Length: 71
Image (cartoon, rainbow, N blue to C red):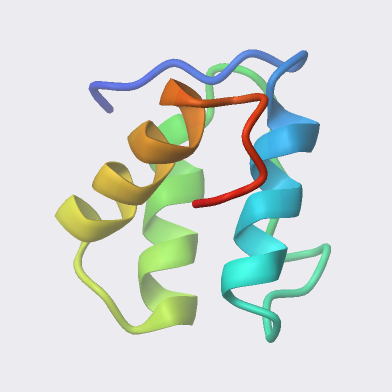
């Protein structure tokens, strides 16, 4: 189980940040429903060619400053 919770309210902002950082990600890559954090992390790790710990770190960083546009 992922050690992160992303609400459906926060996801659109996080998604924008991820698209800015990794412009090759598609909407299909960024499909997410609340409670499916593990699936999202594994998909992103594969698509950005990083390990799951890095993806988890990136998502947590995006959530810390949700109103900031930087990732």
